[in-house]
Image (cartoon, rainbow, N blue to C red):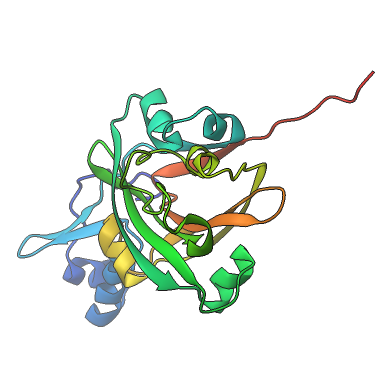
Length: 235
């Protein structure tokens, strides 16, 4: 499949044929197919067999301060630039900060936060997942306490926080990779044990962090592109 011997949609040989061709037992052949399914290369159809999974074209997610500071939804603007219809669903609830979240937000563990879970879509297909946390000490009783409800719903974090006088001056992103959880795999339509990119993003004012998020992206569908502003040296 990787070398192109089998094309998307091709049916793979049966387990019996694989056993005979490679001189292995049926169990080993079955485990090999299961491994390919888990990593997203193959799909199985009951009563029909295993088929090479069609892979969508790899598209680009731009991580850019310019895009963030222009207003509106950065994600929707990114999708529109590629002629893709972007959207999302979300759910928000009051929660308490874990030790890790508290450290990222410079608050105490157990402090109340507004946690919002997102499923982002492109042309109605899942693109990425995100979970964000905002300190309730900042947003409680304001028009932006619910990120996706009220007069400022659908805006980026930079624009929303400006409404309550929190001027964001920079953000940090730490990018790593890990195995998708079972829930993430189901939501993104991935095979179990699939690898995903994890972006840990935090927004800061001059005084403190005001929002942090975990963003999960499947690398077989999207690549990350960073636009980094550079200030030339004064003459």
